[in-house]
Length: 426
Image 1 (cartoon, rainbow, N blue to C red):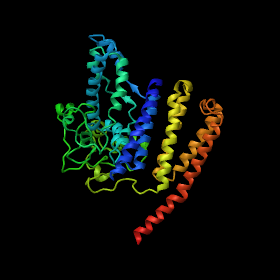
Image 2: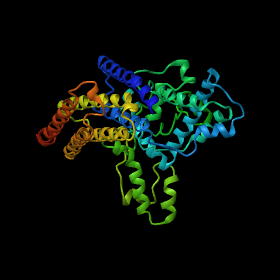
Image 3: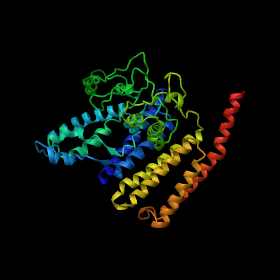
Image 4: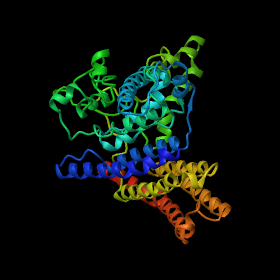
């Protein structure tokens, strides 16, 4: 946990700088592909996922270390060769776990968050799941275990492999010539994120594109079919916690409502999106039929809400950075208390972005948690040792945030709603 937290301390500012550069470049080229509120939602999702990973909130039924101890034919040290083998095997593992997440109903729940943005930009690369609480695919690393690649090499290579998938989430890089035949490029990944019928469930590779070509899932980006992004059952929320469990909620409802036991049991393993017969008519859900004719979610927002949302996510990143940099000092079980505070923070901020009246409740709840933490521990997890006024600053910020949330819900949202109604009637 501590090592991964240190890695993220380095990675987070790099990702943030690149997101800002893409935003500024888009404005300069008059082709801004990164609406601020969408980017805030994406970064929020990245925070929830990274906190989950740092806290170790996942279960692996079959550990790689156990596999190496039982089936290794050779025994390697941590050297250049073992890292190369690990990288290729992890990429093979990534292709198949990614492909299965697109093809099996219950597995789609953990991956839908990554596709939920109706934009395509660097920030949406951060939309990673918190719903992936169980790792089912360690067996795909058997080739590395047979060759005796040390578990420490796998542990280092996995986050590196994930971070290398960040750069190709952009519209600004067009086709890349010869590289298109070897590695996953932005063009390949635009296809993967698209909901056009021509592009659905294609290009699952993560670093090397030849896996798709080898296993028959490759699709080139077509000049006459511009990709349209999102998911066919749109999330219609900025809240990453809700998005993480939307598909699972629908599966549970459909399994409960199904009239025969076969459907109740098999719905989980059917192709993604499958529902029992006549359920689309009996229990309709919002689904995009014409990819070139639908309204994107949350495009009408006041500048005040947008800028406040950006401010909130930047402050949240400061809270998260302190957690990641002090995991060992904070210790167990306090890191889980801190993690819960971050989760409530993301939920509260997202509810406000969704213009929900419940944002006031969640912001009040967040303030109450902070008051409880400081009252119980005496300070904010040892932050007083850095500067003595930390308690007052944190409680002052959270109190101000609570008051601003009340302002948005009681005044700003209603004013904007009235203005929208007037413009529609004139």
